[in-house]
Image (cartoon, rainbow, N blue to C red):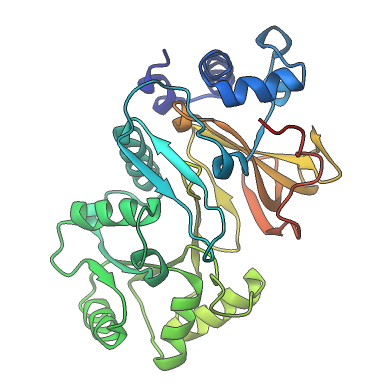
Length: 326
């Protein structure tokens, strides 16, 4: 069994490599879905000597299978958003404390104590459904901030405008976290000149608006909020960790999370840093599900382990990953 303390105390490349290999061996032995995938690729722990050798499970498996490396009872099931009748991803969580420790430590690493901030959330599409891991995280951060002004906003955006302007003018430190389309709706109705507010977008138009490239989106939001930079959060239902960007679309990961780039033409081959390709995520907080996931995102990774997201695969099926039907 992997000790969570080993995951969240990683402080060097050697520690990351060792812990990742330990997690791989554990999941190979305890996750039937992942084991079948590895067997199909003829990959065995004896073949794996570095993180680059580890097979990455296509993220679509969270839609069709129960991806678990634990026999413990499920604490909660997080689910992705989806159109009516479509399959949604389901992440069965057997230890909710792992998720809480992951997002609290990551937030503290990049932003400091949440108690120092008023946390305002504009996440209408997430609030309107059950099972959102983002809502769980943000709600926990709101409660931990201990500021009575912290909270969610749905349709009462005039109240949000008043709260933002009042708190910002008082010099309160604020984090406004919102889905892209809702932040655009806000600045189309109201203009701001914020001095003490971090505006953080979580991505996604969710079918409400035309998709924009990041630079265009951020330019509109910077002008609308009167801020120099737009921050971003990178996370998903299938992960228990988040990466953050403090501007320019360059994300940093916590020490237990790593992004690798795969060849979009050959899902089993990795590419060099600085080149574009599919994003493979190692999230060691996913010790009880699968820590090695081939996402549907396209991006680049740089030598200092920062990365950027430049889009998504056009097809819902990642080329070269449809290797098995369990």
